[in-house]
Image (cartoon, rainbow, N blue to C red):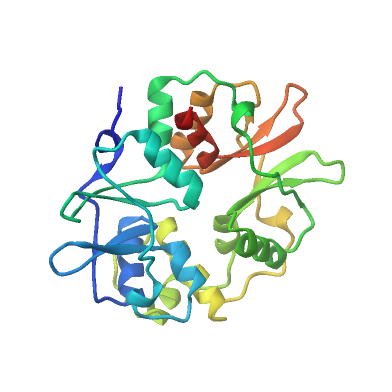
Length: 282
């Protein structure tokens, strides 16, 4: 089984060479369906990390040097996977650059890499053992603008939706919200200077753009309740299920979270991918 970061990391990751602009970073994220990039100098030496989250937190800045996180965590390819898990939990970041002793970027690691390892190891510990974040509920009548404000303030991108009896009826994510935003794809790309003749845009890439346009007041969110756009009958996991099963569901569906229910089919929590990293601290 994998023991070192080099065993689970994505090798030869896509890099952003500084100096660069915000839009250059967004364009790379959009085209490659990624949400974070190591920033390097002309000699390919590591300078920092730029992520979608950093851009959202400084939407008015244009230069990467003013947006990127120079203090973002890094790790050696020879470190144990335990050290990486500890960094994710401590810093609450979702991208860690893997650098060698010459500060050259040789890889990148994310919680997704740990989910694959959990599944490979067939970790049997029950899901309920790893739940630690508070479960924030959204009522099905909550306006979308309110939910987006919740996402902005909590930095949580998905919430369980309940009815008047607190029964789970759906899940709402930033993706669901922005898929209903009043904006044309070509309009959104041209407003950010990304061109209208690009190849087809992936959703993850477009989400990078739509949030920026919303912050800059160039698009409007619909005045609709959550129930209009939420994912109904969402995939969930039992609290007694083994951790590897939750990891597999997240991998197969590209989820970073899952509603957790008990044997009575009642919602008991939301499980986030980073919660499962506690497995590697033991």
